[in-house]
Length: 334
Ligand code: PEP
Ligand code: MN
Figure 1 (cartoon, protein in one colour):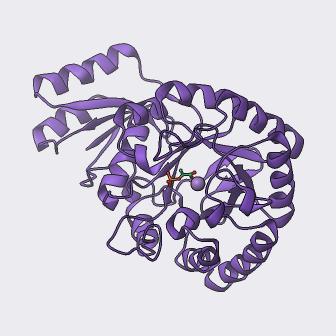
Figure 2 (cartoon, rainbow, N blue to C red):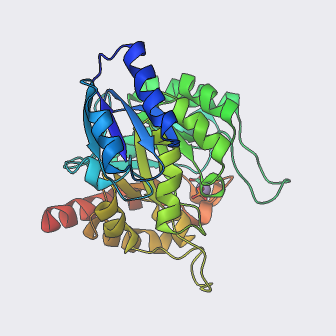
Figure 3 (cartoon, rainbow, N blue to C red):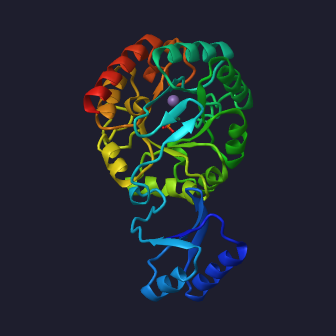
């Protein structure tokens, strides 16, 4: 249950509510949501308890949200969340094309890519500086040097930047140099990392764990919202199945299902699902048709020379064509 408190409530009144909940042995979490203090209890409250809480004038409402992810639930915000950063926005009526290479390689590579994807209609630039690689011998990213390149390219192009954090320290560091912190599939249930995202005051692009159910995915997002950061973009990027023809299986049904369950924007990463550039446009088209609020696509000026994930990276020309068709599909399904 969610107990909504008036924004100007005194510490004394909050302590009074804490005492009422404590006496009833109710476990709760106190946080901020929608600009006001809220108590979220882990179980439904009985009628007498609701009555005594309602007697406190600063208690605005007590909502029964049965979902295990109450702050992410569509029930709490039926008009949905829009995430805005400068001219960028993702949410109802605002589609995000986030494009760029898997990893930041050089300043020239990032600047060229940024200019090309921007001209093609991208609204944000991606590029990993800290790379979660399966092999410890593979390129691990330029780290701080990569963040500095992203910062420079942001200044030159005006594009907002998205880059991945793998540890709580990296979340804080990225918040200084880039606009959106990405949490990758391998860390989707790294709860200390999600808590650090909850404390951050930058939007978080949270990828679905490749073996997580949608409920588990939303519970991961709930960690971030429970920490007081409600700027979360959900990203479906494919799950592990028996299929070997694609790198991961893209469950398109996840898009409408997530949007029915949650008010958070839902985007799709077709690149990591496909594992192969030729499949990326089709998966993107299907995602747009299914109601996605955006796409996160790997684009490299010269995919054959890419340090990482070249096989699944589109060329800028392929990206241009894809964006144009996506826009047509969007208009058709609007
Ligand atoms: C990425 O976006 O570069 C990435 C590593 O993605 P994922 O976490 O989905 O594998
Ligand atoms: Mn990649």
